[in-house]
Image (cartoon, each protein chain N blue to C red):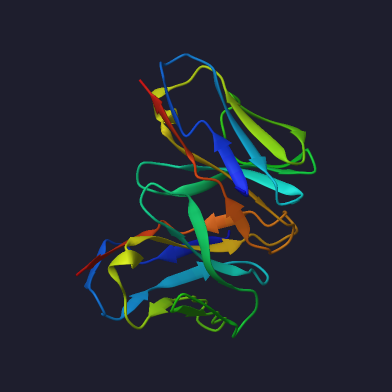
Length: 112
Length: 114
């Protein structure tokens, strides 16, 4: 059983399109996250949800909108895609406080 | 603010060489510290962690000790293998009850040659 899964694994699209990335975890964790990894491998938190409630929203354009239908799912919707959105997006889940986080396999987004 | 600084790579070693990847941090309060590893084309996996000062995390021959006096969490392995080739990330959990999101260093790419 995959603990944290993401779909799709690869996403190639044109500028201006709208796309979604889905994430699901079966670990029973209360908190889920989205991270962005740029071309230099730098990882940065984008959003954090705890029990379907937004906890952290870092400096991310409002074209990015996370949605959590239940605590096992956290989807990322991106409007009006731009070239600079090309990156690998990782979903993660974890407990509150200082527990480790479990990462999905990543979604490589390429905007042409 | 909270931050993590790790040595820049790439690091290239021969098999069975000794590995050290330096990591220092700046944080308010008492964060937990982590090393994650990313193998080519894969997501991040937790390698080891330490939650308080003087704790030593260890896994798969890798070790790191939480040193509060030097604000460091250096990763070491006595004898690396080709299969250890990957990108290694040092990270801390953010303090202040913010649900524990991670702040990462920039990653260090390790290449081990046979």
